[in-house]
Length: 246
Image 1 (cartoon, rainbow, N blue to C red):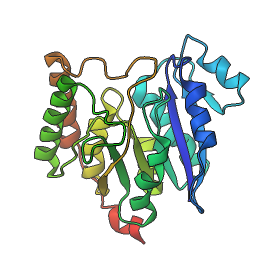
Image 2: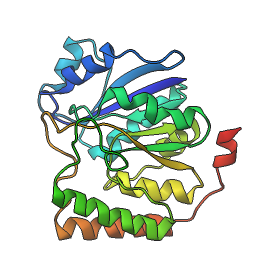
Image 3: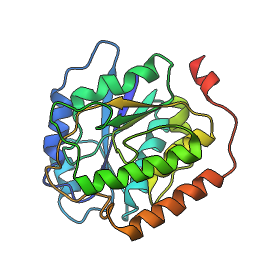
Image 4: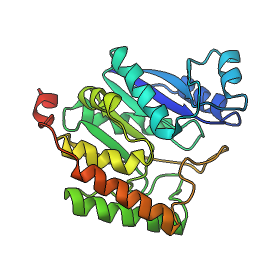
């Protein structure tokens, strides 16, 4: 299974080299071929220079597109290069590379098309589950998505996510810009993709700034709710689950 780790990075000079070193040092199970690429999202710090100095594969966007545009660029690259799966893996040191095999396992077995790494299904070894106010906001969004789709995903804003071949091809062509994590879950459901939530370990950010700045603010929550409702009202497509399982 050929897997591409997509590392969206916006001003991650404090952490990007250390994060890539953890990937390079990790030993993966036999049959799991893991590659990686940094998507430099218009950073104005030394993120791009550090990638060049340390021989880190890097796609540099000419301007800041936001987390949605950066991740979609990675999906498009993975699709064009023929990878079997693509994994969003933050460049800020928050995601535990040791959880990668577990995140990919349901896709490799043909049981899921897309997996979400969750802090809330089981408590990870680090014990990190974010602040109370952020967890409250996440629980609200989880409730809204369950009402719209009938599916329960506890960690709807998790950026540690894996897409199998058919899902990544779809997301490479159609990916939300403003609130990609919760919106994309609704979109995948509408398209008939099978989504599973997998317990993973996460850490507190080691540097940089989160792409979700104000999860606890009412204004942010209203905007996300509207975006998710709009995603739910979009026309759905044919089921992809059976084809993915073949």
